[in-house]
Image (cartoon, rainbow, N blue to C red; front, side, top):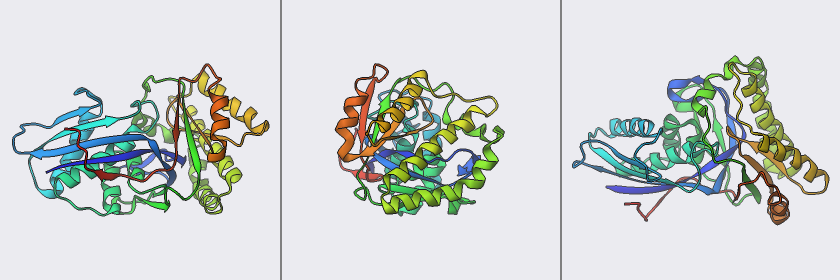
Length: 325
């Protein structure tokens, strides 16, 4: 059977950084995110007795640093359903991989749904979230709709994501400002291992649940100022952990820092905008729908900006009928 799924990337407002169990991607803390409707991965999977090995194509390339992880994830699904068939997989991103835009989140969410469906599994949303987490931690957040909380948990069965609010709950816009399409020198999976070496990591974990509660309250109240202040503080804290890890991890570029400084200036001049950062050089600007055009005008004046991608809250992973092969 053949199945195709599309899944969104997500941007974390409260980040997950560090793991308590690396083998099964149990995070050191819970997190909150929003699915992004313009950063998508589409994946088609078909298991076949005619294949002697898995045939995997990602963005039209058969050589990709994700392919080993894809095979491992297919093996997990084969083990569940007790099949030995190899799979044909074609996956297409509509945005650059490995630049900090969470392509592994959308990729493994789409792979999990498409492969499980193709193998004959009919999994609940919770089961899909649990399974996708094994491929990539943040993929579990791309399964539910809209605004999502990942319960960090302490065991395999307690670490999964749920929807806090549907995609149409609040008119938040995430404007991704791409300052470089270069791949990260240090992948996120490697950076995660360094988290505990930061002298500030313990204090971060001690205060994270209180921060999560405050952010959830700002979402409930639709308090954009409180929301933005928490999100900015969290982004800077995440990168402070990276910068003070051993060895230090520096993802930000001079162009990233320039946009951060401009956000402060724009806000003082009357444009309600806040920033957040992922594990890469590009920056996410958060505003309300009514301020998108105003912010776009400001951003496009900057020479450091290579591309702008406008995202609104999105549905989670879903099956579609248009296959890639």
